Image: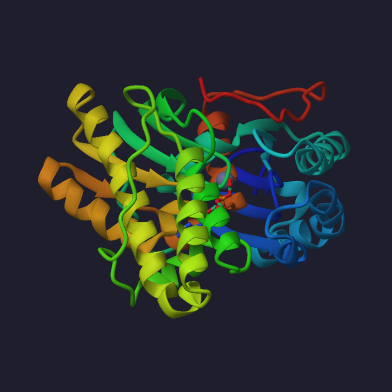
Length: 344
Ligand code: KG4
Ligand code: ZN
């Protein structure tokens, strides 16, 4: 190997608080190493300045480990794919500058990746010795993370259109903010998921926000939750402690029903045989179950990514790189990080 009989892509992800590097060989994943940043836990959210600093510390060891685990020499790479955006600018700059420097020193082609497209491409990552079933095009993907909530029409690997989006906050923020109100750590999504598993999801009711036809809104829901907790805690200071599982189960269930309610409307207008979930919130166990049931009712095949490919990872960045490399969609060294970077 190589020059360039084989596609050997180094993926680099640094859009938020995870520093990740992966090696994808001919569409099959050989390594995917992620350094999480525990430093944000005590602040109840990501502190951008601290995130950039942690990326600086983590990027060299993470890339070295990805190469080593895949038994790949850096000179064998056919392309370097990195997250250009969207995300936190300071965080993106670390990955972008690193990828550019590497490309310059090795004279290896560079590919700029859209992070939200990459979440969707997580469905196409193949594993060694296991054949992974992938959605057929066109399909509709509900992409839900800490920064985004989008319903995307995926016509082909690189042609995507956003049909619906949040008009304010992302659903991941609705999980994380509720967790902060309840005194849980950050990110709260996985903790709420866990606490909800033994709670009564019909105990407390919330109302549905109103947004555009295929759009979402989560800021009102966050306020609704805050007011509910304030009022109940005034009546009973031990309210949270005594009812934590039921509160988590009821709120999580409401968010899941709301996500699927809008998706249902979209599918009436854009019927598809295959539907998918992507992004950090797609790790949610209630959503994964309800989505499968929803698919059966709608007569659609459902696709949910492996848990390790739901939250931010570089395997998905390398996968987008693989689709782009096939189309020779390379960039040059004038590329730069972009906090805003629309899918279409
Ligand atoms: O995709 P991601 O790793 O980062 C962004 O691009 O934002 O998503 C992170 C979000 C956080 O809001 C986190 O609380 C949420 O995904 N999350 C979950 C679960 N696991 C992660 N939300 C609900 N249930 C989970 N199991
Ligand atoms: Zn993400």
